[in-house]
Image (cartoon, rainbow, N blue to C red):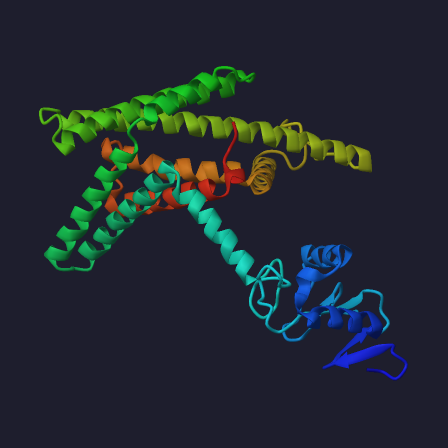
Length: 372
């Protein structure tokens, strides 16, 4: 201790206010530890812990509000004594998380990830999405093995695994028709006419798709062996295609609205700053034959500005971007199954895998889901 009782040095940290520390030492050495502190001391320690202050292990644990506050007499520097036998993270400890008791340390991050995973896996839709990702991953893997000349036995096992995953997905989708009908009933009350039509028709087609899929599951599982599986599969993919077309129409409508809002906002900013908008760009009018710069260059400039505006809108609205990419990837699946556009099992597997990963992402991060 300093002769004047002002500070004490532990390592490279200068700890102020030695007499209060000595009093804390006497209280802790009396056998009570941190639990017998005065209520105001416990509250102060809780406030420092809630602010995420750094705590050093050992006998002396230094908590700093700022990493730059290292002077002995700085008001933001405080030190607390904790007995060595008091465990970190225990009832009388300072904080959990290993050597450094940080509120946002590795332990807290791992716990948050685990809680998010538990909530995610508790949903039947999440399990179905995981099975879907595994199914299309098997489809993509089978195509790669066939292309590189793998053994027929391995290809047969991959196809069997893909079939089992598909049947498990159909089991997990039992009862989804009722959820789709409830969503359609809620979408009827939307104020926007275009959104109301697109979302309602999309949910109705999804309900029919799930109903056909349930019948197909009953046929494949042997409950109803006389079901024409090919006919019901074609019906289910037809309804699935209609639902995706409605989803993409809704996305295109929302993109158009956002582009109009962004264009009008840019026009207002240009007018307020004193600059004028280029002719034929903001208003959409094309230059006449006598105006300089008219014709093809003016059209190319306008197209380029529209593309830049579209990129800006999608970058500023991640849920809309994810929904567009997911629906566009899903569109290849019914087109291939219905024979409208044969793209091969490799493209179908890749698109299905990307779509499944994006769906899982929207389940883990609900703010990435497009609403309504």
